[in-house]
Amino acid sequence: MRGVIPPLGPGERDTIVDGVRWRSREVEGRGDPVVYVHGLFASSSIWQDVLGRAEAGRPGIALDFPGSGGSERPWPWDYTVEGLKSALLAYLDARGIRRAVLVGSSFGGAIAMLVAADNPERVERLVLVASASPESRPLWTLRLLRFRVAGDAALALLRRPMLAWGHRHQLYARAERVSDRAIDEAWRALRIPGTRRAALRSIRSDPRPYLGMESKIRTPTLVIWGDSDRILPPSEGPRLASRIPGAKLVVIPGAGHLPQREQPAAFAQAVADFLSGRGVGVPPREGGRRSTVT
Image 1 (tube, rainbow, N blue to C red):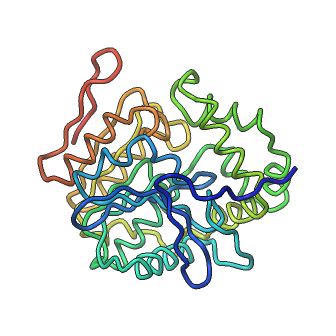
Image 2: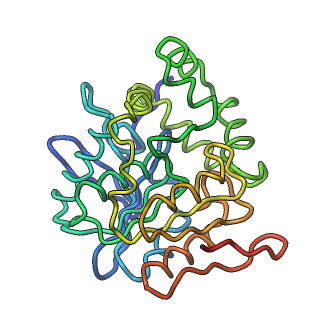
């Protein structure tokens, strides 16, 4: 049975951008907003445990890109990284947002980086969470999706038990932290017609035109990584931070590819400290281990 886009929930809003409806989760505040950008096969739900905690008093907007979450899935539409960058700028224009803090996770981090590199006047600060980059080599299961026949077949055959296994053994550091809610949210979106097609178009974006874009970023930047990330290895964090002038790096222990879900308190404090200018610091996590800050 095919899924349907759910109606608006508490704290959610719909915005029409060039004829396409975008869904967002929002909290109020003062100043330039913090705009949260999700990655592939994700939605604004990945931010729900930190929304309202990480913004240091600013407004928070966790959006669903077209093709994801509660937003529409138009076709044809440009779901490439370049297309999504342009769409994000159009969304900011539609909302009357001149400058924002961009917080991008995984593939969403690549989009946020591209906006910061090409349109620095629109980005006050940048937070990259286990961010993809032009030279990233993600887990082989994601690389497989870049091949048309094999990738199309693999995604078409994906079922809820396989999705749950991937969350427990690839996406998260510890399987017991994966809630039924998180699996249900991801599976519900994948059942909506157009979700898988949009994700495949995104993951097949050609990275070659963007090689070296990190060095063009002059926006104050914080890079956050989980020390147990299996999707993009933790070694990617220092590499990415070293290529962005002046970037700070926080490594959160006991977290996989989504530290905002596995360690929301540590994540929210690191981002809030960065935005408030207090310097970056996070509390001890499991076993008394403290996050690494460089």
